[in-house]
Image (tube, rainbow, N blue to C red; front, side, top):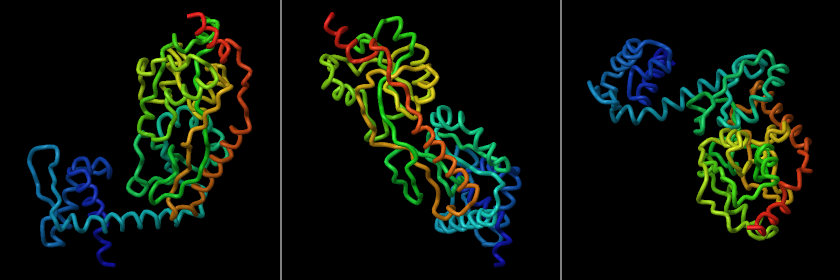
Length: 330
């Protein structure tokens, strides 16, 4: 137990090794670079050997020695266990900071418009949102819970399906009205590049193949052309602004459809994605009260959304009949 006197030094060592810099480690630990350097030197004196090779130039100023590299996995695991232990001490409390990780598009289009109801129900829980397109390391970044999009298999995490979704084309009401219908052969297709890494997500090509079974002529559309955007929320905003037609995901588009900012085209065609939204968290954290509260709230909100059906009685100008008519006149 005497080694625990070096706890702060071990935190400084781990952060310095990960960032290869005292300065960057200091920013993370919210201390000065001099303090981090002193903590590492104290640990080196205790060990009796250097823990880093120092460089005076280049991006990586610190290179871990072989002994340091061997020790780091156990040190990181130990720090993670200590952090988890502190979380469990607070497990019976309905207060504190809850760290939630979500993607930028999910935050903008689903979570933030609904978050007031959680904060009203749990006013003593302060939320820290980690909004990133990259998957967070729950242990390393001290994340409590998150919502991820995919097939539901993430190593080391419990994943519970939150919402499935349909995929369908959408346009703005103004575009639909101005053109008296929507002929996809004459419209700019908007492509969501943020989805290209998700195997199994329906593409324009796949949707059009299914649509062609109902509407002759849709296979003539060139899907290699159009506008490309690498953010799902920005894709929908481009459609709202009248820049073209996008293949939308129902979870992302639900609020805009309900508010009349978007119109669903071809409601006759159902295309269910094989991917879904999942609530994810570490098994060790399952008993934390604030995590349970947020998890239950997410499922309540998702259930409320599922019970609300978007009006599918769109103008015939946006349906299959209009496309067939437009194509036959070309």
